[in-house]
Image (tube, rainbow, N blue to C red; front, side, top):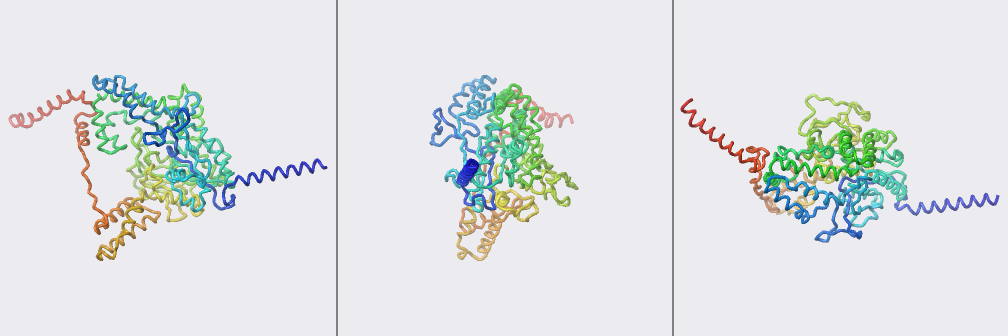
Length: 612
């Protein structure tokens, strides 16, 4: 009996100590007893700091003493010039590729060396450090908070739920997919232990959506840990851009496309046209060959080894791409095949979450064409970076600049629309939301560019509401957040124009100006405080504020400098007259052009008048 009593006492004592230990680990003021589940942000590509280290494990610093970021690569201008100068000169002189492709491939490999992954294991081999935050935002330094809030400005959420309820899962965008998914699952368990809550919210953003694909496939039990999933522009089926990269279906390898406005989609027009003019120094065939060789190097020797990047390859592209690139890399293919299965099961796994009571919301952008890097850039509506059917869970839509057509009827193919009578067609007749997996809980922002999503304060306000309250159950919960909304970035109005307008002494103005100033301020305040916007509204309000500020002398009139068009006009003239040919190929074409001009002149002004 004494032994039994002793065992019971020992068990009770051990249990008490474990309870005290568990209690001591809880860091939240609420100890897990509040209405707010902690939220974990799973950010997008490049939204985690990854720093380069030297051989001693110290940070590499640039000339200004700042740490050197590894994303997307490290470009040493001095080293690049030293590597390519000789081959460039020889290639220009001979008009043939004299070691230029080799030199540029060396530049690519050197630049991406820090992000190299072992082709045998898929593990990163670079000397790097990922800046992680294995604690809540409440425990972050001011610098860390600045980094987090700059990526996803959820300060309003922190004010409601508390910074001890907000976490940021940082990871290496060019790291190992399986390792990062495993880390996320462990991170969720850590957050539960630290906060005392038995469930969490997760916020997968962009590439974070692909990480979530892996999480739900490899750890189906995580459904018991989740309260809400709030996707923001998630790459649930990768990006067409990455699919074209892996299949080498690249637009700029065709000089007809390269010289006909391709670069304008990536940079200022005059700069783009200047590059077009300079690039003609090389013959068309040489330029195409060099670009192809460099692209092959980038894809085969760098991208093919990065399993996180494979997570952005759409399922339609994966079989052909992996067979072509991973035949000699069985371990990487084994890992990417596993993720491919997760991608194939993405929507069914999300459906399982819904079926088990997890609230799933999706916030997406549309009607911004993909950057024209791959030839498939206009095969789907998009947000500039990810195609809409990927972010919006299989939704059907018209292409950018087009509509679904007059008389189109919504398909109602989703099993998750609570009422078939709902109208899920966008007001611009571009999107049929009834075809997406979650038509009742997917919010669309027309014309919003992917990279500026976090600058749309309505999107951030919506995400905050979804995470911190239960006020919004679906797209019909409130007219303040309709299913279809618009793009905006009101920072200039909010931070500059409105304060300047309010600082004007209206009593010193004539009646008409005072009235217009008050009206412009009222309209701007209604706009910045509102949660619904339409195309062109922001620009109209900006112009009204600027106009009255100039009129009352509180702002100087903007003098628009005439942009230089020299290279634009020259490039267009070259393309119209010489197509995609280089300068060395133009002489015979010029002779033909002169001959044709003389012939046309003779026919029109000499021969025709005399011979009819």
